Image 1 (spheres, helix red, strand yellow):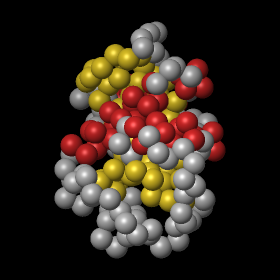
Image 2: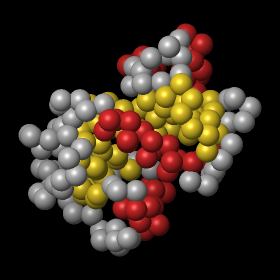
Image 3: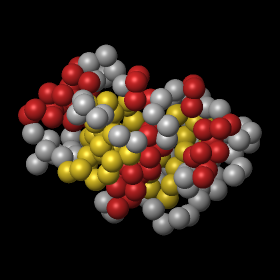
Image 4: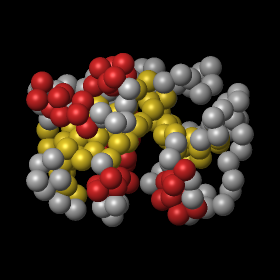
Length: 180
């Protein structure tokens, strides 16, 4: 299986891969990651690719991955979502937001017995601003706090519940921009 087209958004086609791709797509993804992902991590991450995004010229300009990460608390394990876009595609209005939502929903639909939900870590400092926080809240994400490395962590529980106690090593997140 290579990929299945699931949606076109602002001239970009979004395809489901779900970790299954033929050699040509694998090679495209490895080339796309060349300056972003260490060579030792590339092979592992290939099986984690959820969606790929192509521009109107059919070039790979973005992708998402999902992996079962370390538990946030002893009884909570989440899919962790990663998003990577080529510089030109980052500025396409609401494309990253749409792709993140589609990926989150796909991961939740997998109903993995060990996954309680989906989490996203905002490593990019440009994403830690009130306007982005409002977008996340409007898309159904909930703020968890700042992880041990100081990055904001947002989550959605599969059953709609909320985490009421910060995991060990986390600190509270600033309230600015968190309300709808």
